[in-house]
Length: 479
Image (cartoon, rainbow, N blue to C red; front, side):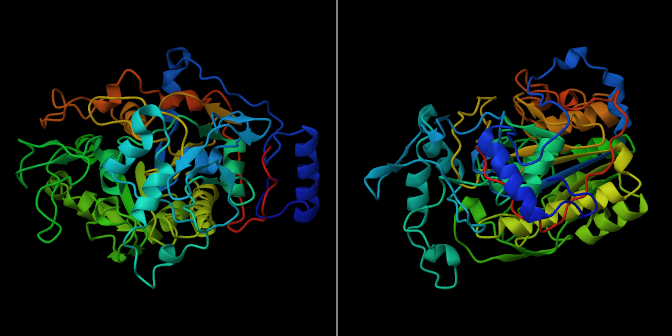
């Protein structure tokens, strides 16, 4: 089903052929590959570490609110939804219906999910039973009275958190998994909502602080981080990665798609959408509120997403890029997943078409699980994490082909990779980074955390682009 420059075989004929091949067991995913599927995780210590410096541009794309099982729970070779003879063996209690719900294929491209606060995460994990998803989604609908909110009038009588998608709804994501690397043990860095997840993405910590100026007195906080209030403006005085990037003269950009932001304060399901602008601090755009960014005079590095497309086109991408969507393109319920896939595809295509592709690594992930079901119990790391699994992909000319990475990962692994590639292994570490803060540990050094170098083969010739249409035809059903 691979399309180069948007052209390929007749889609209808191809879908029928692939569907037949699935039925006969001749192929096991939406995109046939001439390479055998790799699923083991090689020991990073045995890999040539010097090859990492072939990556001169790291692009982190963070989408919104999907669990791993909701997108890749039926992907061949992945640690997905437990099944026997194609029927899920798990069934999650539904208090309203006085029964239970099994995972099911959901063909709708608009979903509603569930609440995703820290407390919801704990209740859904339920001591390792992973059976509280329907209960919390039903609880989250209580008080939803807004006649203009489509989530208040969902077409289903029950929450859709047990639904999953496959190549029929998200064919490009499945194609990226088939052609590059899928990570099936990527956990949210902490079991909580979007703002802390975005804070972890750039700083490996989420904290509440008494001072807006210095980090002394900050302590871990997964619900209401920062100093100040939303009325007075939040400030994050602890150390983030851009402080180290500035110290080492490493260029960076944080690119924000301007528009609306649907995520609610503290992870509630329903709220009025707010405006999102590149220069305005927000839940998905926390860097303007970091004192490090302000003191380093690097606020100008936070730019409109249109600047990313221009930089990709003319070969001027910074060494480190973060890209966040707006509400329409975020996949955050009730946004269309087709719009989100189109947005991500346009970003990936922009890099692939540009002169920086041959030295780039794109890390695509989702910030939190959005209330959607996942069967895997998150590992425990320090007192804060990890959270429920999220989808994650690695797309690069040096990425392995058709590789399913089973290492335990979180967004901390992105920081670790960047630090190893560009900073000589320097960590965001109060003992060594020259800017002490009271974080409880160095997340990048957690013994359980895998190493993204396993996802690359730096001995191979850089692979050509795999350009996909932004609005592809549906792929075949998974088996």
